[in-house]
Image 1 (cartoon, one colour):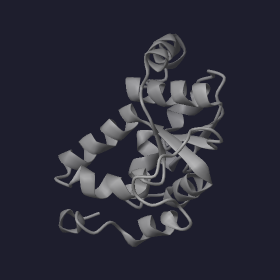
Image 2 (image 1 turned 90 degrees about the horizontal axis):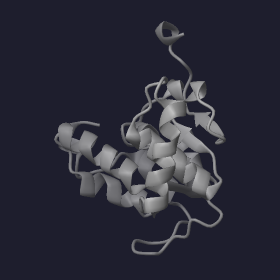
Image 3 (image 1 turned 180 degrees about the vertical axis):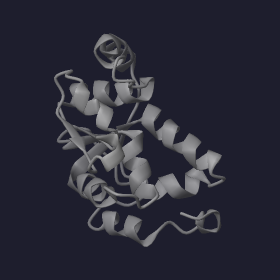
Image 4 (image 1 turned 30 degrees about the vertical axis):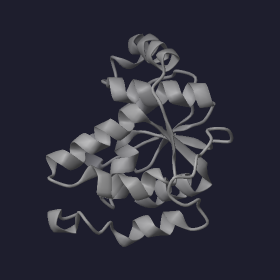
Amino acid sequence: MKEEDADNPPDHLGDVSEDQPSRGTTRSAQGTKATLDASALAALLFDEAGAETVADRIADGAAISTVNISEVAKVLIDRHLDPDTLLAPVCDQLTVEPFTLADALSAATLYPQTARAGLSLGDQACLALAQRLEAPAVTAEHAWSEVDVGVEVEIIRRRRQRDQ
C-alpha cells in the first residue's frame, strides 16, 4: 500500500465487510473461529501473500488481541500511514479482545516453549488468546510451526525457497 493511499483502504478490504455488523457494533468472542497474529493482519492490509486466507478467517469470525493491534499500528506508523484510517474498517469486522491479566500470565508461561523459535511477546499474546478462546492462531510466521503449546496454528502462506 502506498503512502498516498492511506485515506483509501485497498479494494480487497471491502470484500471482508459483506454481511458484517456496522461500525460500533459490539462483537462477542463466543464462537470465534480463529485468532489473528499481527503478521496475518499486516498481510491483509498490505495485500501480501495469504491476504485472502485472512479475509476468509475474518468473514468466518476472527478475534485479535489489543497487543497485536498495537503491533500493526506501529508498522503503519513506521510506514507513515494512518493507523486509525486503515485499522478501523477491519477492526469493525473483528472481535478485538483486551489483553487481560490472565492473558499476560498465560503469555508469560509460553516463553519457555516459544523462546527458541524466536517468538515475540506479541506472538505469545496471540497464542494466549487462542488458548483462551480455544481457536486456531493464524499467522504468516513459519517459526510458529516449530512450537507446540496446545494451539492449532495456521500459516497463511508457503515457505519461500530460501527459508526452507
